[in-house]
Amino acid sequence: MSRATTTVSTFLIFVLAINLRPAVTSLGAALPDISIAGDLVGAVLVALPLWAIGLGGWGTLWLCGRVGTHRIVTVALVGLVLSLAGRVLGGSVQLLVGTALACLSIAVLGTVLPLLAKGSAAFTLGLGLGSTVGALVTPTAVMSMSWRWGLGLWAVVALLAQQVWQRNPGEFESPRPVTGAVPASALTIHFGLISTVTFLVMGWLPGILRDAGVSPTTAGACLAVSMAMGLPMMWLVPGWTRRWRNQTLLVVVLATPNVIGVGGLLLAPAAAPWVWAGATGLGMGSLAFVLTTISLRSNGNSVALSAVVQGVGYVIAGFGVLACGWLHTQTGTWRTPLLLVLAILIGQVYSGHAAVTRRTATASLPLVVRRPKNVPEVGV
Image 1 (cartoon, rainbow, N blue to C red):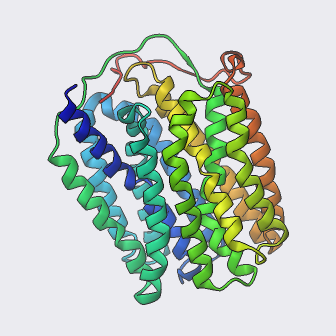
Image 2 (spheres, helix red, strand yellow; image 1 turned 30 degrees about the vertical axis):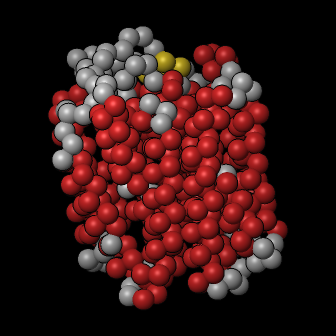
Image 3 (cartoon, rainbow, N blue to C red; image 1 turned 135 degrees about the vertical axis):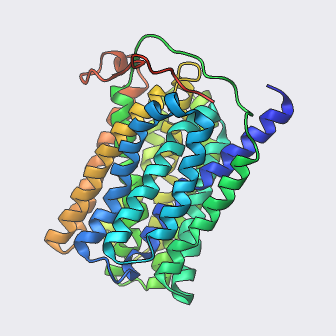
């Protein structure tokens, strides 16, 4: 691959990755102000992206094999533009359907991008920047205009990415087949638990702080701070993942900030909201770790490992997020949901240890990735 092609590819990865989170972080930032979203609809809205991304990740392997990677990414970007614009044009049904369709589009991008990135920090940095901008800009748009404008403006960002992608066809290597099986049980569970915590922060942090007496402006700004603190981690952690010999220690180090942040939200949320927000942002490094691990462990250009780990992992996370939302609805407080999050973080550390040791190959869940019959492996 030429130097020019490598540069263009890195830029494309970054531009596409920016679009993987604003649809979700903007929703979390605006959720307390969305008049058509009650408690139950709000809980479903936070969990729905995870289920949609998970199911979409499974379908990506099949679609890329039949339609072609460049074409399916183009369709995903167009779908993202239309769904982000359409979800703000009606009531709660349109909001739910539009969010689901947007996240199905994100699933395609999110499954293919780790293979495009090949461990490059451009992917995780773009993802982190998209999360930050979505959380930072949305509250301002909501305050100055409305929640519909705050959510709808991200369709423009997706449209720009689609135009950039269309102007750079054929810049990537051809697909290569993969044979055999890839152990994925522990890595899948690890990804699912990390995603549960990540999406809970993006979806519920402003609501937790506002219920504790923090002003709406400060609560929204805290979400932006959380996402911003994740940016340096998204840049640094891919390199750490390659270099650290003791990967279990890295798993523990990356989980520790989230334990501090969630513990603070549980015990004294209004006492130091900026500290708790910053800590949960640093905890985003765990997501960068697992995404980089998926990329580095993929066999050649195989998209299969990425599809199964993200597909099943996001479905697991969807149930975790819904459970936390249901507990909040039933109890009327955040105490029980946050205790559940702390338990999830313990599971995150244990599954991370299993994922980075040889025991992964003999994990109790016999989840493996095999090339489906008559379906060529896809890579770009």
